[in-house]
Length: 569
Image (tube, rainbow, N blue to C red; front, top):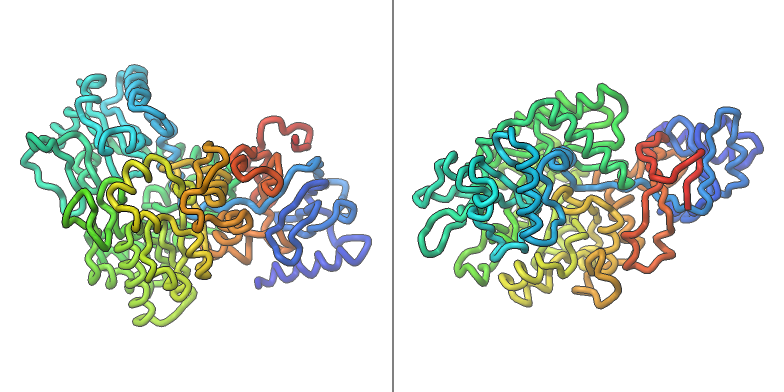
């Protein structure tokens, strides 16, 4: 426990036992429903905040003893307070940029996607490239949209549209021509050019590193565009009650954008940044990460994690599986590194003290990540490393218990754990029933005692924590309503799901002493909701609105209807 937190705990105890607290609060939240997620004091009515710290949690009557002439008081009128949400896997810079481009997120049909692209191109006649993303793979047969669809609406300019999952791109004929991609172009080692089965011509869909054949031609974003994109992304996180994030792909340009925003004032969220590793360079890339960590670390931004892509995604046949895809005989997906170079890379990063943050989706990809961690521990010795395996869509039963043994955090995106078209149309048919019964095993990992963390992977899918929490509990889509759960044994209860976005994620981000629960001495990182998650049907959790987000005692988001220092019901 830090000396500051010990002091504040002592002061809080003193204040509870005397009439006059040692100092007046800066902010007082009273008459609320406070779920602290602290087992020692799970419920309260009021919170007093001083100097950005929680100094009192308890009854409203007692909290009023903290009032002074300058204390700002908010009558919550029964609104609910939770610890601020933590998003343990998100891309705020990319999400913010997408908000300013051709955003295809959550469009329900291929026709709506094309209408949006057409309208965007017409509204931006001077752009040399039409770029954007967010289209859903199941909208197109075989998750393989054809270039001719884009040619029909934008024939004269190159078009580059990333898929919602970030592992495919859709381009038009003009873009293929500029990149020199023809039927003779070989697939890159860790990518695939989708081709017409009759002619061998590229269809316009590019998987994994094949997308880079076109992406490298895109005009670079300006420094101002990058900073503004990150500003939008962080504000969007705060709007959804988020006070801490793990930025899952913070390269040097993103880190520079954080530094620029820090120069303008406090960030709305605290940031643990994962620097992406260049898999092609392997161990030789480690000194670059060490240099970035040294140059860009600050109080609000800690670039202490290294992002390692182990494999791709099941929907496009690029996730690394232990057994072949049913629709691709003999093919087991793409591992971005073979076991030996992956082991060497992980050992080197671990030796330098980095937290490992893996993208691992297929059961072979998950096993490779766990194997590399086990070997690194054997060679470097044990330490409090808290490695993450993000996504972990499918885990072999033999590997479930290894998470707890290795101290590895399964970092789920729980919003994906429902039978949506990604599962029913693109995943179950290529895995079969037995392997599909092991998808998103949140319940299994919880029962096995693994430390659990949740994130959104926004802009891949919705950033809203309450939507992910709902799906973790119901195993149904956010708007599906009541009904049978998909793989009900893998559902978790509401306290477990809330912890995944609060105390569990805080542990995964090395912040459990600072935040994640509502206790005296901790940072005043809070979210105020218009309803109590414990009092609504599980299928309606996503309807709760964020009224107020507070980080270190400072408002970072104020919902509509917030007036005169009072939170609306």
